[in-house]
Length: 159
Image (cartoon, rainbow, N blue to C red; front, top):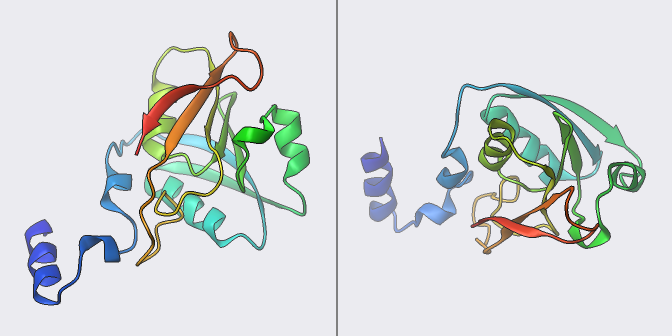
């Protein structure tokens, strides 16, 4: 199948970046299922894209549409410098922004003291921000554990 896509892309002068849903976001897909609650604004289209990404990775999503996500961020301890457009809770962990599902699953599958994974802002090309023709910006997934003072992050993954 990949060969056919490459051939068609070559024939029509397209790059694979012009296709929606970057294939890297399908890497690390497992059958493991988790329930996750996502708090988001009704008007945010990329939040819906990120939720679809989670569902593609077998997450059962409780989609909570709210007028203001900020009280949820504050209650869950999301530092301002880590903020993005949506906030989620899964197994006692906080997920902020366009964190790839495979990173969430890796976090949940290992023993660790990490409280938060975050992708600050809204990097173009990340999961949920990867519409056809979208620019592919490099971005970092940051983690914060209970040993760090609030707002002190470690690098978890780079894309």
